[in-house]
Length: 143
Image (cartoon, rainbow, N blue to C red; front, side, top):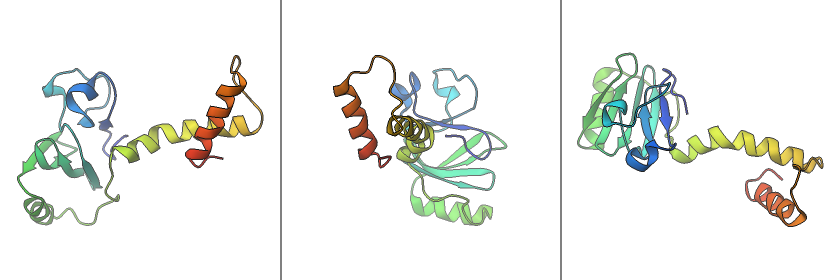
């Protein structure tokens, strides 16, 4: 998932094994801690020029233009700092890695399910696999 400032919230190999869902620069990232702004994200909210949330090192405010994260010990401290910085109203609701999955993968599944509905089946897919694909489309709500 891209942040409004162009950084990435990533849950991809090989980074996820060490950093979980993480906030990192866009483009090719290394696999070291210096290449990750915030690791093990639990949730985040977008504000103008900032990402605010909770990660493995605690609550944070990430300043997108500066590429710098500051951490706070409690959510109460975080809220006070958001107010102190005058960030205003958030530009998103509270997001989690599930939202990132929906943004990245749901459109691909939706398109594949639509093709399957119209009878377009990938070459080499047998009937039992087609049924499993249809069942997945139903479970995702793309019936």
